[in-house]
Length: 496
Image 1 (cartoon, rainbow, N blue to C red):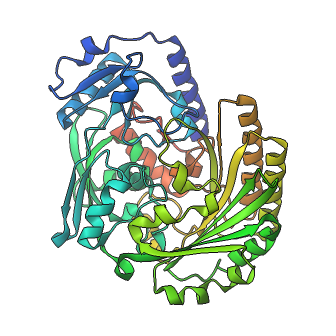
Image 2 (image 1 turned 45 degrees about the horizontal axis):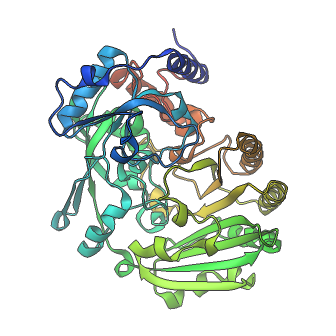
Image 3 (image 1 turned 120 degrees about the horizontal axis):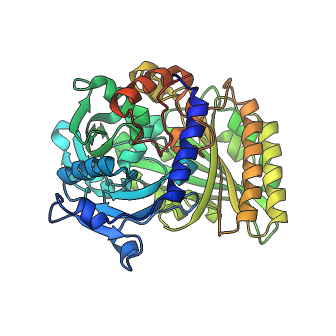
């Protein structure tokens, strides 16, 4: 019997929550110990050293709950843990750098397969190849890539795991000149639902590899992956410019942003962050400009923002690996300042857009400022990142499972907060309302969202698009028919 994807998603989520509430803690040592290598570790969640031995989780919002963690030292260890978990009916989640923030993870109550020992880097600059372990993050690659004169698409948060981001797509400040990170993925080694270790590439398990390129979290545990590299653009240098504006300029800024809807140089990225200044009680807007070209040519490409009369202009030309250091967004809820702080309460909603509507964005800005004024404990931001899409769209849509190549801007609504559930519930309502308002004029017929930015309430047709979901469900039935890998934006077994 086929079940509609939305119904199956809700049903399986409820079943996992029920299982979590009724489970008793198993003896992990007795179950998993026999068969593990000497370098592997078993750590219980109640152990005093748990937080020190296990990769810390970045976000505490809708977090999974664990009996404990297995920290494998070899691929054979990962295979063993998967097989024992299946035999013992214990749910598991493989984690690399702990940055997953979707609410779908809250359905997990089981064990953490911590890949913290898989941080190897093998760079072959002569052949433009990079092979990394499953837990390598972006910042680990700064020095080796830059020294070799090479680049790879990274996201906007330096502490995020390379593979977790790449399997979803990897969007970010390098997208205009390099395209998506998923398009640089050449092959992966992964442990499947049967505990087998397989390789997937365009020539080996090619259909599986297609699914991994956009929905990879659904098909196995990736222990390592190989990427091809790009030579440094502009000699590896970029210009980062922070322009600060009062909140009263918001409509002017959004009109300036709209002027780039149909024409933007590949070398230019525009990050527009709207936040709240608690001291002045007013909203503020920061435009971070990223330019991969000669610094003296930048101003001719950003005249609409300069004409808007910024209150300050902080411009620096640095190596591309130093963007996180110099782009501080005026200090207002900068993604470059909070991305490496573990144990936060972080709540986020997002959507993709192809059309910028200044009137709608102004209304959303005003609503968030008003909410901030009424709720002193709220620390939130509203961001629009305009990434040139030409290089991304040069790869045919059917080449990968990545859903939305024609996206022009990523819109995000984010808040960092304490354990104040009342405030968080109110912020949920605020962000959902804002998301719906922006979607209505987004240029997409339905809500579209980059899977790694999704809140978790959207459903598989939104994460992966109806066009890609039919093939993804077929792959899911083949490679994960018992839905072991279904805690992160799960692909259903059937659609529709």
